Image (cartoon, rainbow, N blue to C red; front, side, top):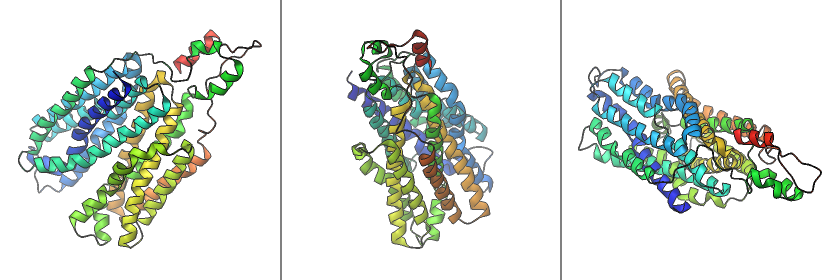
Length: 428
């Protein structure tokens, strides 16, 4: 199977799985009244919907470390199959639920055994040898998620006119099962990946010392050096998600009374992402500069939302979409340049988990601020978080001078690696 065919097969599987996972949470307020033990007039409905909205995300974040180790030990394709089957089982339980308790169990199964984004990225990392292509592909997985975020609410909104919300979960069960069947036809991977460096560790002894020194920068970074990226991913997710739950209320306070306008403004950053992100790989600047540009743009976009002007508000939404492109592009490029392929399951699970934790904390923070303060405080929170990320990217991120796994150099004209060094490099 060609690399391009494999990539687009995984992307298609991720898209149809994300269609189900990202589409239904929007309709939770319509699902809950159909369950026994819950009434539409119950004031706790809004609170329940808010809690259940973040429950799968929370479960995914909690399980991420375990599934990362599972993928590295037993194979990334197997972990991807597990994620697709977990989504199907979760949707099936939700569709068969006759009470809030059973429905909650279904959401917990969906979150705990799902995690298709991290599993897809972890599998792709074992199949794509060129790191520049991998960075481009990671952007495409986000593109498929954004496409699902636009397509799913529209299509499901039309479908729910004719069927019960719970029945929709039963129909959606088919999508991750289709993805599972397609994934079964993809090539398997070994638990131990081949490094994506220009030369494998075993052949470095045949490379002249000068050439080896030049190419050492392409070797995997120490795992601890990825933590600044993880923190930036957390802050990025927080900055985005904290503005989502109460956007309609905030937009209404700025004079937008039409629900159609509010919906378009909400989707505008995602539309900008879909239109432009496919060309983002043309950015030739270093990943650190792209990340800096992204968080600077995001900080400005969040701040401009506070200006009492319709024109500035629309411009801020467009700028928000551009910031998403720059941040995703920079973070994915930095991760592709830095990770150890032998730990791809752990790396991508942790990277995705940090986004999930950022989303959970953002949802809780937005709920608290909306209850105890004004809506403007939400965008002040987003500005503060993105500003903190901007400072961190300048102060701590050292992607322009990576520290590769060191090779032992002798007095001979060739460079060799001791057995202990090779062993250490493969287990990091």
